[in-house]
Image (cartoon, rainbow, N blue to C red; front, side):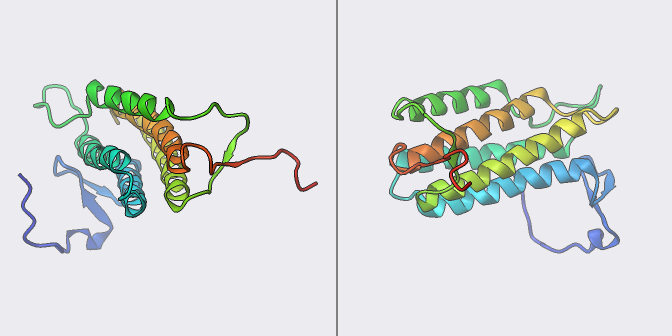
Length: 190
């Protein structure tokens, strides 16, 4: 259980922050950027949910994803180390649930004949914003994983990759199952 009695601690006033291990890192550190961008994805999904109250199935999916993103932040905040007790990690069943949700939403959509531009309904537009933030979080996680001594769980990376797919399909679902999609017309303004 997490208990937050005091919100400000002043420990970050020197430009550092603590990982879940207690180790202090500069706030510009790539690991901090990784879980910060995951948090940003979560906040963007929170904005989406202001527009999905009339779509209870989609809203419930997004609520589960928000919880998963907190799990992923915890996963990233406590790097895996040999000989250390296992901490909270994103697991394959969370990725599989995303895949199931993608399939459930996608089954109701007509096939695409063009790329989709961000837009349509407010929920769809905000889902595209969340998708692009999610892609950035994934890139930061992959870059972090490529650094020696900076372990990142492969399942966490898979989760973010699948989440961006989910957010795309969800945007189409929020666009009246694709009816309000804004399609790209190549060279339209030449």
